[in-house]
Image (cartoon, rainbow, N blue to C red; front, side, top):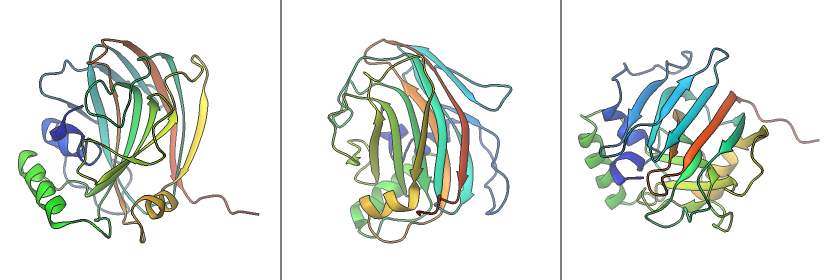
Length: 230
């Protein structure tokens, strides 16, 4: 993964994707847009007839993204990995391949965002052709060793992105796994304060370091209110 492509949850690489008009709050999700990283052959990512995402790669990496202007509530989905990279440390630069990453980009700053972080963000927007980009991100991953700290800082996001390994690379393969995350609660846990609105969702894969084969799917992606605790 590379700085210009992964800062703020790959949303900063949108400049290399097919341009799309800015979304308006309350509108339905936009169409999926393709994105890739300079110097890395793009993977094969396809939207299936039932609205899922099929991911396939060997030594490749790329992503899909779309606008999701909405409140930070709960996000649920199901995913499976049939083939994927070996365990790699995702909290270190280099060699950090993963079978699937799902990134949520937010439209507001973390409460403690520094002047340096804001300058880095401005530079990234300029790199993306002046497009408005997310100001923070939460990343959910199938990959890694499973020994990474919970909600660790991405080594590529200047402190504006936190990563959660939900399934390590050693998790059972060939079976669907259901996930639900409380975006508002995780924002408060990692950044503090009340969460800003969600702005984008990005689904990607990366195997350029290990040259591993990836065959994976993501389906039934849903945003909505979190279940009430009894």
